[in-house]
Image (cartoon, rainbow, N blue to C red; front, side, top):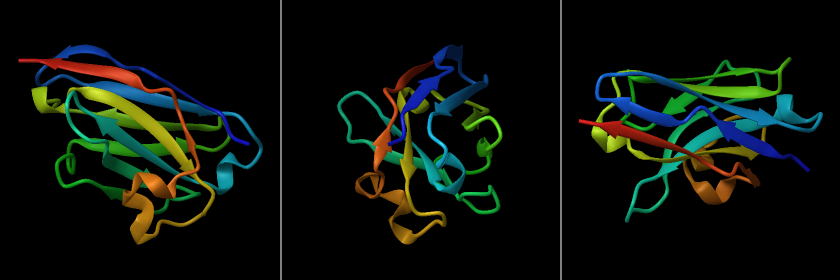
Length: 127
């Protein structure tokens, strides 16, 4: 069992930055793929980024490439999402998720692939 706690959301002006954190419990964190998803008001949950067990492989949604960076610190059981050059369309509740596979697969972009979810953290970008 893995428990995930998201934090770091807030209100920021367009062009600003935020760093989200996801703290995980459990000794198996370092063997899991970790992902970030988001859900904007009135929209379905969408993939944002994913990272493999050691941080050597990452994947991003086209909408955030070049602006967001996913990373992890296995010693701290934490995964991060650094968000730069934020836009109003980035406004959403952001969720971290854990997949018991160690390596990214095509399905790493799909929410149904993930076994565990955080509670979400709100990010609001004002124009």
